[in-house]
Length: 334
Ligand code: A2P
Image 1: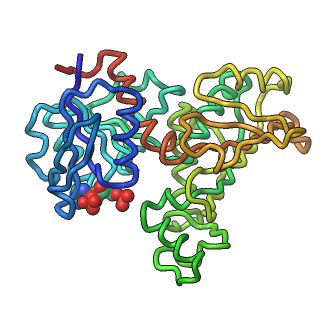
Image 2 (image 1 turned 135 degrees about the vertical axis):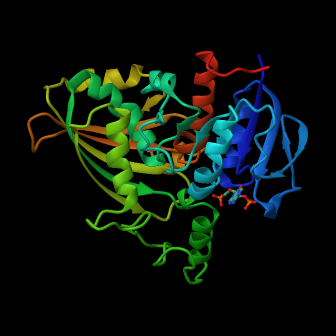
């Protein structure tokens, strides 16, 4: 079987990566419909050796026979056009935050909660980039030792803010003033991702907390987060402190992570071997290192988790969800 695929936001940083990942993984695309705003309608893109013309997204874009639409064109575009696509029988996999916490929308990391796709009503959400990479190892550990509490501290790349974030870093390095972030990002660290809310947390921090509970199906988890933007182009790094209900054997815990799909353990500090943002750029797996007992509490562990935020944090995870639908025979195809 082959599938008619729309990519909404096909000219953006994540949209272009989605096309690349579809091609790399040989997703059986019958017809491709690249869509974007009026600004880039008419632009040409090449996909699997064929040239396509970018269409302007509008209310009639989904009148065609499209099986699945991968959306990465911002929250407001998703809010407006995902329901239109869904009503037309298109399965939307949405990379924005618009529907993630909607009770009728499954929030999927394929290695973690694949069965949640079964109850989709034509919209499926891709989690926040920082949440995705944490979920892959944390699901394994939650199943084995039952997590009680999580403390997330993130070090996130500027590519997570799209083209304008990367520009601010590049121009800042050459001495120009910041245009996008509220402070210089070059040679700096900003404890501020997305907007601040009333309780002093940023929306990014709240996303990590709420999405973790939804994906792990556990509202009792106690979670706190500090999310930080750092002058790195690609790759989010996370220091994750976890308290378990049950005791664990450190070697066993490391083995468990090593044998789990989608995880690469780099944990040999005597060789200076641990994951770094630069080291994982272009990779689809989640990398885990610096695995050590938290000696200040009973059953605690510290992990250093790194992944390519544009790949596993966005494009790759979205394409994996499409593959999951295909493998579970949940999309029609031609
Ligand atoms: P365009 O290139 O026409 O502006 P990024 O996050 O890298 O800035 O990319 C955003 C993507 O979302 C781009 O492909 C952009 O298209 C697309 N986009 C933004 N706003 C809209 C809109 N209102 N309708 C359709 N696509 C949009």
